[in-house]
Length: 62
Image 1 (cartoon, rainbow, N blue to C red):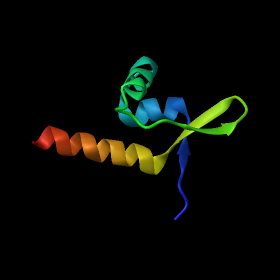
Image 2: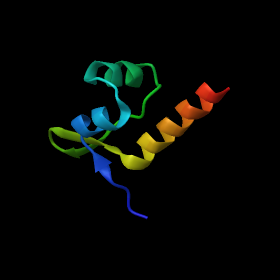
Image 3: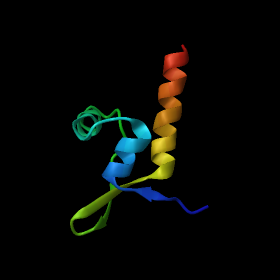
């Protein structure tokens, strides 16, 4: 199955996180890192975001 990719604005809408929170959580290893899709462009895999959301839901349920 092919993965979809999301740019930062889309990731903000999907996750509800601000730009600064995305990058802060990435620095702490709590949010997936993007992949480079061009010389000056990055995007996040949809599967990585879904896995992050599932992990958050699982940790909040305990």
